[in-house]
Length: 329
Image 1 (spheres, helix red, strand yellow):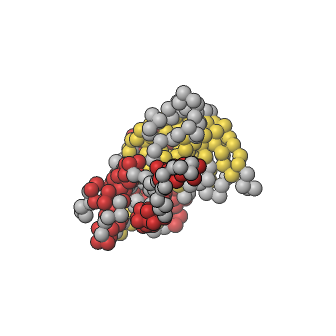
Image 2 (cartoon, rainbow, N blue to C red):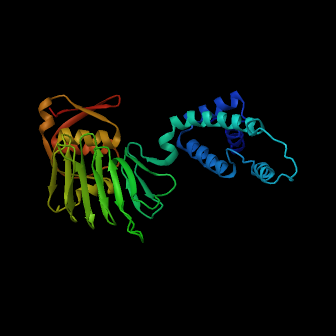
């Protein structure tokens, strides 16, 4: 681990770091992950609050002004502001160039905090407004780094998460933007959002939400959902609203449960890949259309593969990080 501390970072922001130290900091940022970035921006924010980029020469300016108004005033030595502060401006420019370079690389991380989960990992979060989030495996949630402010509370989701949205005194809307180009808008409720390459889903548990999505002419359309309803967005953009579900299959993953209802093995293979990072292929193409129904509890990919294989009379073999499903002979 490369050692970079607050003192070195402050020296860097002040423009006093050597070329080697600058390279050390850049390497540290690239190799040390999100914890390094958090420390970098924390120290930068504190340093900026205590240091002005430019210093004003207001006393000299006032004296010069009064000397022009009053002929009897003492003469004021004229100073060239540029020469007086040239070194400060030069230092500021050098600092801005250095920060701009890093800011270009990390511009999204400057204003936003990103939470990630690995394959097979789940994470519980509480946002600054009190909203609780349960993030599923292989998911990314991006939120404003310094709070939501007075406008809409907006977050970005890639993957799957359950939200329990806190109500605010000024009735701020909570908006979940997704990579599938649809938005979930709510004042205060509980719902699950699924947004991956193969499509998207919104399952409403409590309250009321409005889901906005682009139509064929790119104009936004909206559907208002009620508790128990499931909205699906196919990969091609087709939207469907299903009536109240008998079982809450959309949040089964929180309990490491996978509920299938005539679900094709091709879709189950995608679910295994999304949650555990394991690529599943089929020895016999016709097997992809087989369907499975039932509820399966599994902590990892092996357990789920074993349960599905027994149910569907399949065998599976590992080939590196890939699994091949075949009909049991």
